[in-house]
Image (cartoon, rainbow, N blue to C red; front, top):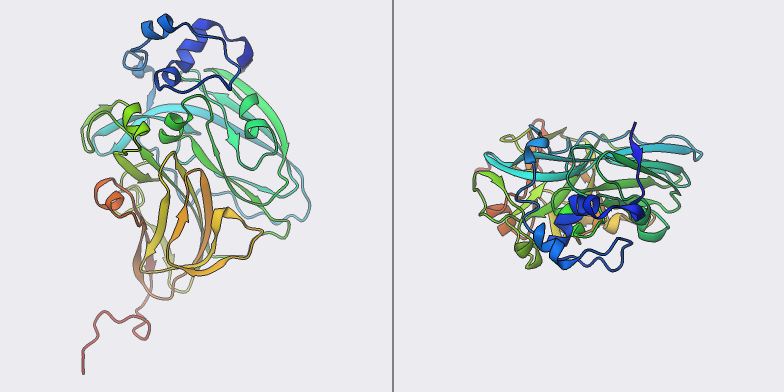
Length: 368
């Protein structure tokens, strides 16, 4: 059984073990309820992360979230109490082939599991932390009325848990993320996801739903360096990202990775997109298609914009899109800050299967 934590009663040794990386990152602790840490102790623990026992962390063959692993649409007409359990899991996996990284995740994937509730539901959220974790974690929901979106009351050390209750009072797609000191490092390392609060009337039926997350990663080495890469706080402060990736790994959602998303001609799809950041906005664009409907900021209570070519999604924000697929094609989902596609790994594919529609698009047209 997990032990109940109390973040206001950490010993100095326990705090340094779990929050040392946050201090080294230069984050301000003044707004949080933590014990004071002497400067000379911080200096003694200066090499905390570089000397950490990474051997205790599990190596995961895959950290990229399956874009089809989404809870089904909600059909009930009345609210209810929903129990949600999330585990903070630190692990080692690959940013790209041969390049390993210390990920921090919710549930072992990037982005973390999509949570799906209905407007008016009461959510009982239990956050746990795996016993072999190295860091302090918590969770902030943008769908919560309450201090820190729940962050102030969900601090967990390795092997502990915290539980909060909240009512999902407003509809939309909202980010959740870790919000400890050095939250930017934790989010960059994978600690973010979507909580979807469906409106009371529900969502229109579509043939497919996909779940995608973008974030940037900063390392002390260079893009493509092999082996375990150390996180770079200096590059993060300068917003000089080495990687900008979709679902946690370079090329994860392509035929060269774990496989592209697939639909059939004439079908429709809804995409839930979250930009974890922590720093860079995404100009999210489907090459060879448009967003037939787009809800900026995940604001599902608003009227959608129509036939949008590129949607700006700030860091810490979400968007919801619907798409039509009138012709067979391969749609490249990109951040239209295109150097991120060319050099930093951003992108994923949707393959549309079906017979040609030359009246709409004819790649073999012969001029008469």
